[in-house]
Length: 87
Image (cartoon, rainbow, N blue to C red):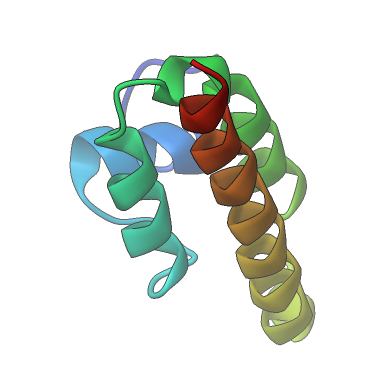
């Protein structure tokens, strides 16, 4: 059961504990998006992506997972920028 400690979820690891098993540049991308005033509109998508692509226990796939996560976060960030234009 999750209890808010490091390792429970990469989303909270990044935002509350400062880093995750992803490392850079994923951690910085998430932190930068979190500062956006409309982040709440995409936060579930970010959390789902991080959970799905977590390299925890899959070290042999880490490079692929990091690339896929970075690509997914870039797409979500673009959607976030588009939300600003719509408002």
